[in-house]
Length: 110
Length: 117
Image 1 (cartoon, each protein chain N blue to C red):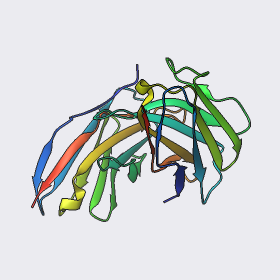
Image 2: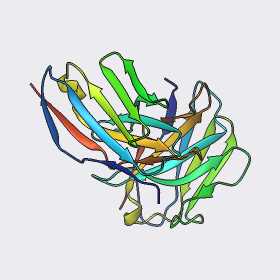
Image 3: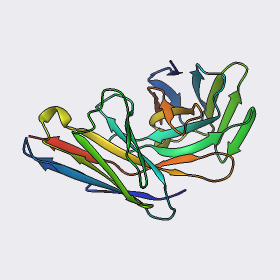
């Protein structure tokens, strides 16, 4: 069974610090990886996608992928209160479908 | 990013009625769309994959006769909850698959909150 694991949190980070969110997945053959942000009562919003080993940066966000360790992470620099949300890790195992983790609830403390 | 709309955003209905939810990709053609359901404090659960011009593919445990999906055009998929009951109350979210570059990406609609009385 293909699985995606995330620490449910809550993860509390002071404003201005770096928030680090982690995700592991079960299938070595996984093709692509996504981070979505979901505010309470809203639908998921795409933040980053990554498919090659290494780092990918977009503004304050950096996604890191290590296929050998089956590990993907999201770093948020200079955390802002508006970053407080649930962050969903999603993995495409090659059939167009996404398998979601349960999400990590992040709270940025002013 | 790509824009996906859903209508209605919120619906309240009586038990036994049917409810139709529309999902539209506004700035790209989507041959594949997905329908999810999310209960409070839980993650998204994939219900079905909607393919333009063909029958939807349902996930295990999802009743195809209860959740009717029609993908009649490259920009529109509809989900009809037939004979809705209180246990069908949930947050229904669609996504449209954007095919491009090295990664096919799902973009989500804003969701429809269904309350069945």
